[in-house]
Structures are given as C-alpha cells and as structure tokens.
Length: 90
Image 1 (spheres, rainbow, N blue to C red):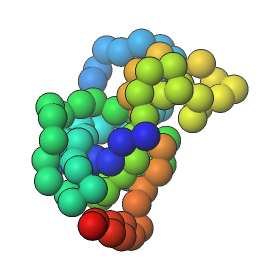
Image 2: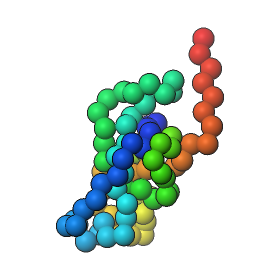
Image 3: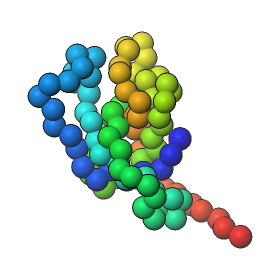
Image 4: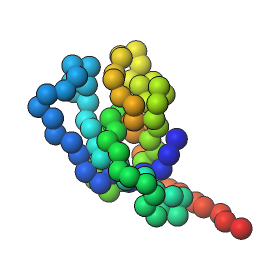
C-alpha cells in the first residue's frame, strides 16, 4: 500500500460498465513525511474519501480485491482513509 492525498476527482460520461457507480479520484502520492512524491494517479474509491484527505491506495491486481465479489476493472484503488500518522525517524 502507498500513502497519498486526494487532490481531485474525475467526471466521466463514458466508462467501462463495471465502473458504473464507482467514484474516480485523483491522488498525489506522498512520503511518510507528507511530501509529494511522484506523479498523480487516478484511483477508484471504495471508502468515500474526500478532497484533501490522506489515504492508503494500492495498485496492480490487488486494487480490484476491494470490490469483491464484483469484478471492477481498476489498477489503482483507495482502500483506507488515514486518521493519524506517527513517524519515528532515527
């Protein structure tokens, strides 16, 4: 899983039928120190995350597992909303 921050959403009038009813959000990957890292990615959302929230997201085949038993065509999915983050360095 990867940390990210929700920075936007995607509106689509035409999409794969298995994505009907699922929100697509734009996520900025971040480090544990909450610094931006990497390019933004579009993720399906199974949590109800909103703008500005810190989230965990996953990719590859595991991204579709959050929607089981439905078969959703996604390669990136938000799987958790992070309430608190404690980082101990040193």
